[in-house]
Length: 396
Image (cartoon, rainbow, N blue to C red):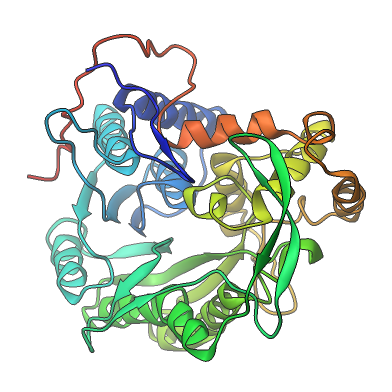
């Protein structure tokens, strides 16, 4: 079939297998170009199919020569209907890893469930024995709680008062005002259950109990802080409460890992174009201005550049891992530089439908959004008849 991008709001309903494969190859080539990292050798990535999770798996495999197990919840293709991009990404990753003689297996299912945790533990025991790095990078809007059977949904809302600020429809470039009503307590509680640290802790409890963590193992979850302009809807909103919970959970997990000499960290990463961030009001406008600023200063990074720097300059630099006053690894340091934030804040005051093409990088935003779904890559013939039915070799 001829596969073209088909948009519905902030979602692309199609994905291109060849484009997703090119995306994975580009990331692999970047990691290889930066040289080997003396790091983890047996890695579990929970949420391994897109974004930071995929970039972590690629950096583990092609930077550290690690064996990797990836967990994700993606839809395979059916005749005439494409798979989700994460499915195609994972198929391409396994293919490239196997071509280089690297162990790579994947499990497709609900990572919040006890059943998937058990499957993963069995696979580790049978194939790897133990793992020395666990990446937790889930980004789901809903969670079926494995103990209660209750389905929890997260929300994107401010806390305490109504929030009004500028946003942009990145499809049209129209800048407008958006108003979001404040969350109630149920909104806050549900968002913390979905996006907080409880499931990460449950994963680590299961892995510790099964004795599949190697001596000195690390686990890492990802967070975001961001600037003052986004904090009402993000860091001081419902998502922020969940991130606070996630970051507090790291200390609890570290105590549990003392028996194996291990430690848990939260890495605070840079704002990037993801399916999730595209749906958060204000964030697309902020990212457009941020990209323009950071590209001008020569310090722009995507997911793979962030993760390669995280591994090589933080986790496995040979030095003690640097953290901030709250114990977090800060790989958002370039985004949060004073000169960067001052320039973005000044541009924010000027942002309108008319000025944004000149002062922002809406084209870069759109390009990154299309790339998420395998579109817009050089070297891919998007007019060619393409087989949408792609298998992941380790999933039967």
